Picture 1 (tube, one colour):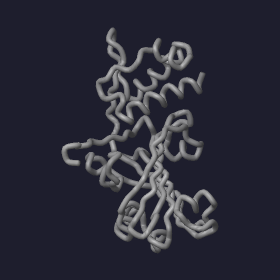
Picture 2: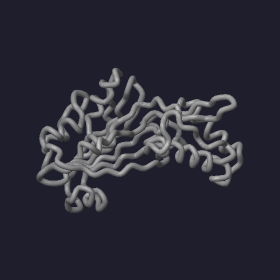
Picture 3: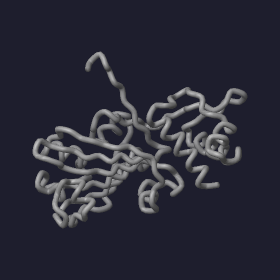
Picture 4: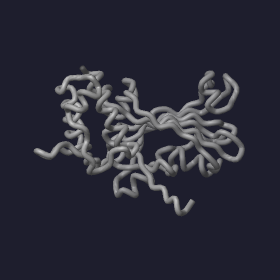
Length: 235
């Protein structure tokens, strides 16, 4: 039952995150969700109740359940320093540096950065907090050729994004967004249960010289969302 319950929650969170369901929209009923996911009505009800308790959905007696998402929203179309995003919302920002180290790139890491296997790369893992609550775990790989002093930075006074944009100005980026269940380490860092769906943004950034970094950005799905606005008249 637990896996089905988590699958329904994850599905609804992704629908809200990508804008398919927006604030005020009515969500499918327990019966429809039970039929869609081939589960009992009790399982569907549990998924909806959890999202109601988390403030993401709102039940209205006799009318149904609606999206009531008040989580902080970050842009999908811009790359901003996370402390700026938090401060713009009028909240306090802080972080916790988990590790700041040099490592030898394995095959996967080397491919992400366009480097040779066994090359030295920089790795940082940082928890970002909004009003003392974790909203992002940043696991970043950095090419030392383009940011030689990265590993020596005091990330209590700056962010990786801000520093890298100073020494290797961003020219382009690609990213992928997906929903997943956290590992025990990620769940502990974000202060969530291991059955709580999370959002992962995998982002690779480039400067004029080459690939600068690859970041895995984990967010608790019940506390974070992504969005943006496109003005097609300006394109």
